[in-house]
Image (tube, rainbow, N blue to C red; front, side, top):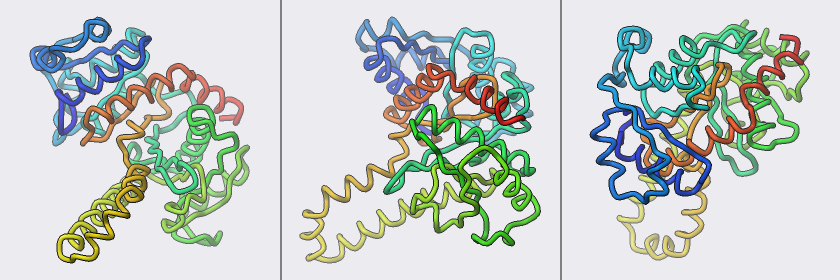
Amino acid sequence: MGGDHAPGEVCKGALAACSKYPDLEVVLVGDGSQIEMSIQGAEPFVTKRIHIVHTDEFITMDESPTVAFRKKKKASIRMVMDMVKSGDAQGCISAGNTGAVVAGGVLILGRIEGIDRPGLGVPIPLPNRITLLIDVGATVRCKPINLYQFAIMGEIYMKNTLGVKSPVVALLSNGEEEIKGDEVVCEARNMLAGGNMEFMGYVEGKDIPLGVADVVVCDGFTGNALLKFIEGVGEALYKLLKEEMEQRVLPKVGFLFLLPMLKEIWGRFDYEKYGGTPLLGVNGVVIKAHGRSKARAIDNALKVASDFANHRGVDLIRDGLDRGGM
């Protein structure tokens, strides 16, 4: 029930995923009558793998996550977390309240032993690679150990889920020199430099779009602001280009020749292509989809969840922490 286009687009995404992946089963948790209307007319070989669990309680985007989570025992987000914990589901996806998703992961599923705080990692498509930005909102105020653990979890995710053989890890700071950064960032840098990973040191915000690293580590406040800025720049450039085309004749003609290339470039920065963001560090597969997700994004988020579960992502993080001496 979470997100700007729920439950209709969420249901469409589930139907699309089940039509492509014959071994996938999806449980839709929310208003049963709305869900049933949204899946009417689908092929029987698809709907037989769609299950509906009804609830009248939902956590809205403007509610306090922890308060709502404790009060609403039958909230849809809470119910899907319970299903993952009990083993009735191998993973869960939500396009709803990010704070509620994080709270559910911590309160219901619990943290992996040794993990102090979970992190949300967003894959950002760049010209020469995909860069995982972690954290983007799960842990706003971080300690050095949090940043260090984000790096370990991000490296494991990129290696085992996205197939990067030797992920390069960087730490976001206000300069490349070792003297830059506050006390938290400086201490995290020392920890990462002594860790068992390919750590390149500091990067600045300007370096991220150039694809200099496979994993970029930062606190949740900075990461969330940076992610929203990247999204905003993309939308602003699109609007600016459209306005220029409407005002001038020659650019309109040139635009016809540039259109195929522009579509390809725009597609590389399409968040829907990558579906969702894994909440790393909790005892279960939890994928946070964008609040504006439509059917295609939900479809891809289900693929992300399925791959993470099939690749034993949680176990791999647990094993990686053990090898790292955490």
